Image (cartoon, rainbow over all chains, first blue to last red; front, side, top):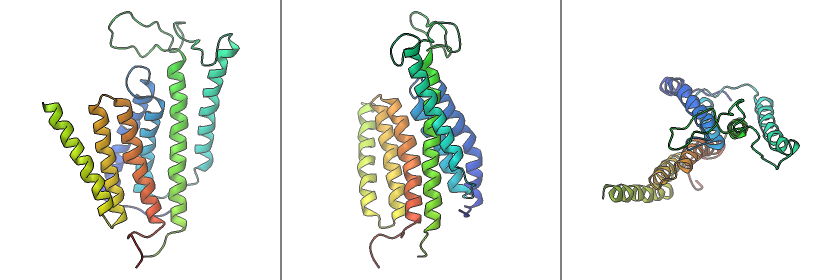
Length: 155
Length: 83
């Protein structure tokens, strides 16, 4: 993989990558308040990976890193789900809601703008799904770019 | 009324971009037209009050699918059909 696009494409990529990643993280951690969530935010973050691969095109071997992050995200998601059974309730039991810990605030009554520190295990699961989707889609893009480079046909 | 006109415009744009995907012989132009069609489809999802589906469609359909199509065209021929 050693192509490099023009200076215009590279400058626009440098300017746009950070806002795209920040918007994706916003979608992930506000998943229980606004439209979006783990999958949508992860897909937005992975589109910044697509921009970087298309614009610069020279990447090291990232297969093990993406695969590890994907496995860690899925394992923590399933661990949080099974922790509900271990605490004496059902699968996916929301044991963190209203306890006062991380994301454990109490939901206000009536019409309110929505508070980020609520939701119990739902924001944690959104973060895990976001990690998993980001790593999986980036891995798919990286593998496609790498294998399309090795079998390029001269027109 | 303005809502009706906006939705009519979106549907016309959807039909035009979908026809352009079939009409182009250059495969990269067809892939970019498919991305534009997906972007207009996400605008239609937003007008029909499904914003989360609109975000997923814009991210997956317009960005990731176009990138994967361009990588696949790069490993193959750019023109459609045999020479």
